[in-house]
Length: 457
Image (cartoon, rainbow, N blue to C red; front, side, top):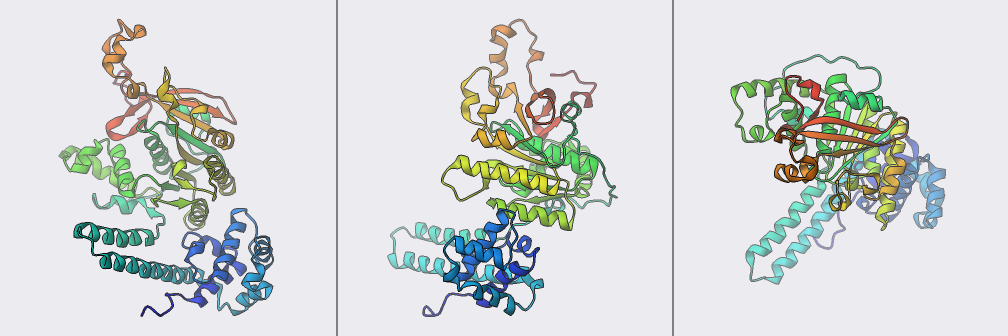
């Protein structure tokens, strides 16, 4: 058994590469599935890698351009020259099955990894460690890691994450028109809505609410305006994301939903919210690791198959960009790619971004553009940079009351539940600050006017 060649299918590999050379649409089906390292034969891996490089630069993929790219990399003769590329196309049965060929190549790549894992586990067994539990844990981790890496993520309709809560009722959908709105009145006045082809950056320190705000914007577009929304959730699993959306829509504490402690009245609200969200065109990709070419391919395929009006990326620093040791350059590649994708698909893209710790070191803690991590490229490529600031995150009620500027003020003026949305950059309009309500228990931002009976905090 150990003298056999590792699992592979050269014909499937060559069919994948040949499909790229003859079918302009093949790259969108194959790029989310395969990496160059999934190929067994080096010539096929190098040719696929050259094709990916052309695609990332928005250049055509054909025999001439791939040959030029291979030659530029010094590998054209190694793969067999132009004759090799021509023969690939000649031997291709049909380009229609490109995705099927890719699945075969991916499957064999996983089998080869399984063989490697088995060899490593055998070594653990031969070592005969005195700690049996530790040895078993190592072996289990290897197998689990293989299974986790093998699972291919793709867009999943939000309904599939919501269904465990209850069965959704039927509801009709209506078309939407015009620019998307944020759902926050004063912010819409300042921004003029979410303009197509614009890159919006939502930035805040951890725990302030950037994910909540982006989900609110996604919900308002999908539910309020019947838009098709793609959410790339790199930090949060789809189930957690669905729970947040459900809590905000039903206005029920997310902890009560998670623990099943809601009342009958709340149960009715949850059922209604489930029906509303299940009919919304929200598609979630919760891949933990996502590269820019995969993101681009998935977004373009969704637009072609279902339609696409808004993309949300949570968040920038978790996306994999170019192969660079310089993190600033990598972030620059990511932001430029997102801006190009927004223009190419003519949809707004909202991307979250972490802030540096500089905001924690000064008074007041209001963020500014220089606080953006790797700020040069983010600030340059973004059309809109929006910061979230909540004073209650940085100061307790007791600390607030003894500050000189607050002495004598009634306790009710403590800014609990108040958030400032600071538009620090607006390429096509004014900057400014908008005050909104943030309801922490349901992770929801809203206008104060939505609850006219309640005084502002």
